[in-house]
Image (cartoon, rainbow, N blue to C red; front, side):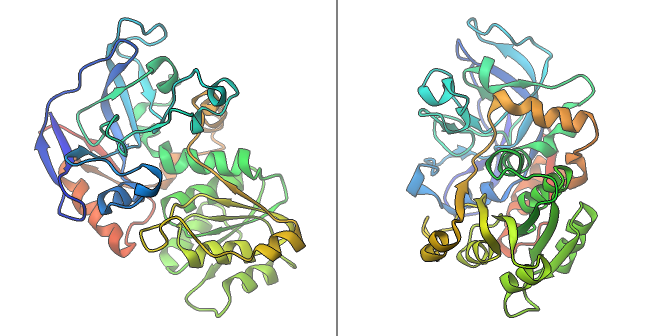
Length: 355
């Protein structure tokens, strides 16, 4: 089958012929219908994130935002059938550790990151294997087709978890999103749907215009002001109730935290680059004096996908509105290369995988 192969970090990616996956007894194989092209794939290609185990040994298949159609199931799989369309969270879980049993399977003790770890070759490919498939494959409702659902992969579902669960955003909350790439725009759209008054912050007018189209009531171009956090505090008359850094660099994280009011909550969605290597300097005394909460958000529990899917079915959320364009597998390398210059708007999705 065809797949996008990482052969060496930071070297050009290519589409090559590789072996199809073999099904495990508790697993399933899905024909990939759509797979979002995410900045996290770019990080993996660059060789970032070895500090928490997301650095696979080349050669390795990238891609972690798939939806698919089940084509084979293992002997021990009970709740999936061939032909079923599924969403496939990137945060594969075991289902049996204490965290899984307590509804936190997105941070499973035995977590395997699809496309990021040797144990889980990714989904820029014609087929992908899903381990522990009864848990890690989420059946899609009949009126949400798999190609349309490809827009609700890692960026969208992580933002849903961030805004709906980790913050959580309540009606009337002032919410500021720093960084309006795919994950940031997803957070804008979701926070708006949850009743927040959303402010988008970015360096590019095109991305800020998209944020407004997705529900932002105000925007700040950080390249045109001396103090983006100060602008947010002025707009909100004292600071936002919820902030999010959707990029993962020191500047956006610090600005997001400094945008908050007393008692506010910061949610970190973006992961850092090799420049920060997992560490960002923060005003810890401000956390004490203002009783600010700092939370992380990783993926979305398969057991809570129904909340997001219900909002999509009722048209409160529309992940397709985030999809910038669809491409074929041979265009994936150039889409990832464009992310080196932050030139991607919204979510590009690969929807053609065969010759």
